Length: 304
Ligand code: MEV
Image (cartoon, rainbow, N blue to C red; front, side, top):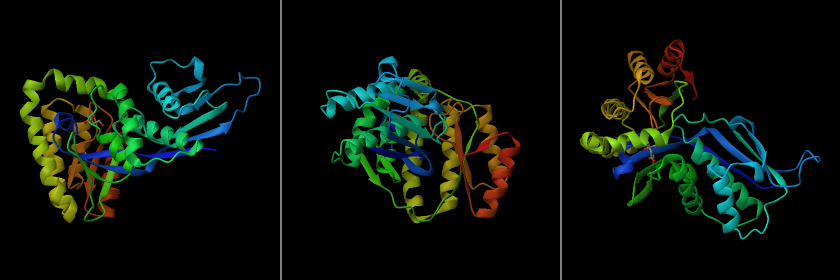
C-alpha cells in the first residue's frame, strides 16, 4: 500500500520578502509530520469509490462528494492526469498530521507532498524531490495566491534551504545544531489574506521587504558558521521589520518579548504571521527549558 511522509517547515528568515524575489531561509521540522497512506476500503456498505479520510482536517468523504475548490481535490485530479489513471483506486487515502493547520508551519504544502509521495509509491513511479516540489508548487497557488516556492521546496527536499525565487535554491549546511523552540499562539491565520495585504500596501512595504532580504543574506554565513548570537540578533531585527509590514499581532509580539526576556538569543514570528507560530533561539538546553516554561505561562502551546 502506497505511503508518503512530509515534514513541517519553519522560516528562519525572509517570509513575505521572499515573494518579491528576496532570499529566504527555511528548515524542515521532522518532529512534526503529515503522513498519507492508502488502505483497503473499510466500510463495505459505502459506495466502492476512492475515499479520503482525514479527521484532523475534518474530511471523511468519497472523492465525488468533495468540493472541487479544495486544494487537495485539485491535487488528486492533477495526479490522476499525470499518472494516466483511468480511475482512482477504490481505496481509502488516510491523511494524518501532527502539524498545526493554518499556523505558519507549512501544513498545506506538507499535505500535498505526503499525498504526492503516497500516489507515486502506490503506482511505483520513479520520481525525484524536484518533481514532487514542482507539483506541490502548483497546489500552493490555491493556498497562497502567489507563493514564493519556499515552503514546497523546503518540505519536498526535507533539508535546510537558502531560497530565492527565480534564482533557485541551495541546500544549507548548519554550522551547529540550533536550540530552536517552535510555539503556537493558537490563532489561525489565512496565508493568502496576509500575503494579499502585504501586496496591497506594497509601496509602503517595499523598503522593509528589501531590508528583510538583506537580513537573510547576512544570516546565511552566520548559520553556516554556527554563530548563534548573530543568528539571534538577526531574528530580532527580522521580527521588527515584519511588524513594520503589519504581519505581526499583539500575541506574537508578547510571545517574542517573553522569549527574549527569558534569555532567548532571538525570537520572531514564522510564516505568514497575524497569528500562528513563532520561533525562539536558545543558547543551551537549560535556557530552552526556561523559555518554554515562560511561554506556556502566557498561553502559548509548545510545538517543539
Ligand atoms: C508562508 O509560509 C511564507 C510567505 O512568505 C509566503 C510565501 O513564501 O509564499 C508568507
